Image (cartoon, rainbow, N blue to C red; front, side):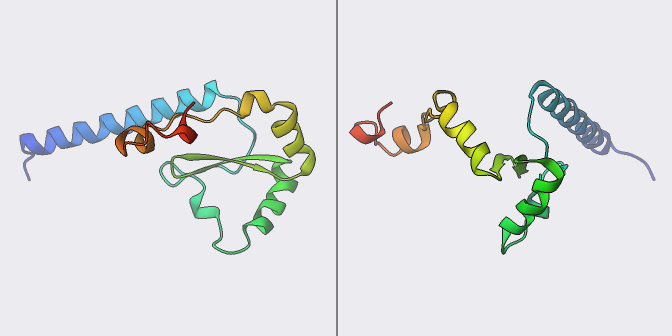
Length: 122
């Protein structure tokens, strides 16, 4: 069995992508101070741990393990679960100036031609 140049290039490309993914993942998670939560898988995140029905029961179980604030990742989307009214009040009322900004959405505003809409202005 001989390796062709294509096999070598594909193998090196795959190894390079895996190394870049691992390096980037370690850098981004070590720089941010995130709340505790269950350990995610590389691509799925915590999506494999979420039930299709009664997710609040799983969140209540995780509250005993991780506390009132839990950080999850669903595929590439970060999710913050607030398990108590006190945690929600602290984050959403007391720190509202920090979390109340609405991001500018290029997809909906510019690509669909809604840039003249008064309700979507920043």
